[in-house]
Image 1 (cartoon, rainbow, N blue to C red):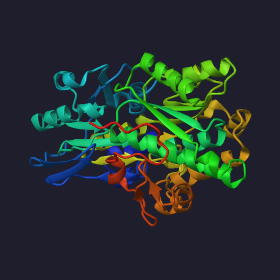
Image 2 (image 1 turned 90 degrees about the vertical axis):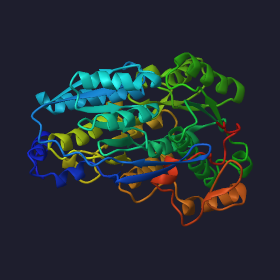
Image 3 (image 1 turned 30 degrees about the horizontal axis):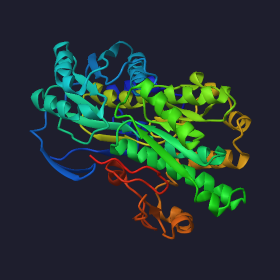
Length: 452
């Protein structure tokens, strides 16, 4: 599109001239609901829910100005999940100028979601984003009650004619974080500070572990590790049952270093506490590594910091609101992977996208990782995997890729779970629905998996 700016493009979209081209902003997985939607979601048991939609509301006319509301589960200063969502809110305010006004409510308990949603409606919000899995049912209830308001729920699976779902998925960045972990670890022990045992967290842990296995496998094939070394690998997980609890995350991270000698720590908790623990050990002379999570946390642990699993939610909010402003609002399931949502000037899936691993302000990736001891072969592999995933030529959840690796480790081909069962056979690739409902763990996890 030549030198057209993103704002010029969106103005065209809002004017109804290039609605079809809006799809180029996104990509990934997107599906519109039917009149009757049956969703099967696996946690620790299979739950089937049938949602019958009411008659489709008429699309709103092109809007001159709208008010959008955001419901946050944590504080906007958590530097994790909520901080990243709020950054996306600020981005769309700036991007759309005076066309979009936003308001937000932070630190909302799940039980209080519905009255908070209704308070935003009373303020005049016509589009409402609810940004936690536990807000799903209250959002659906509000969508049925207020058909002239459009709702978007982050990380859920229930939709309505005026309620869509969205997620900037991180399993691919987690895989790359794991690859670096496997390449740099000296103890071959790894720790993960986890929030809740729900599919979102489970697939991220699994993807991180798969990345670890590739990093370790490459070291084995290079002669740097023996097969006996690989059989000593341990991945420990500590469950917090909280999205935001810095003291508990700190204790969990320290315990995995002290009890198991873990030297790489990942996490799904919305503060930089785990990275800060790794930095403390670095300053004390023990090499422990960690990452940024959702947003830039590097300043909290510059010595211990490797890469990150990062999200630009603003690109998704821009995409969704552009449809509404164009008068063609619709309910969709948006599931963006690496490269999706990149700047259209960069070409299809060529921009940074909604999910990524590195910020330009961190400097040169190769130089920074090399200075911390990540070997050149691992950095080259990291960049290769990143490119292939962004362009949809490769995915870590391929049974064929893992067949020779897990055959030597477990005697079985494909992706093998913690109990030794083949879950993804050679020739199979995990799809959106499997990953969205996953409740099992890949080979290498040390602790029993919590149930219920």
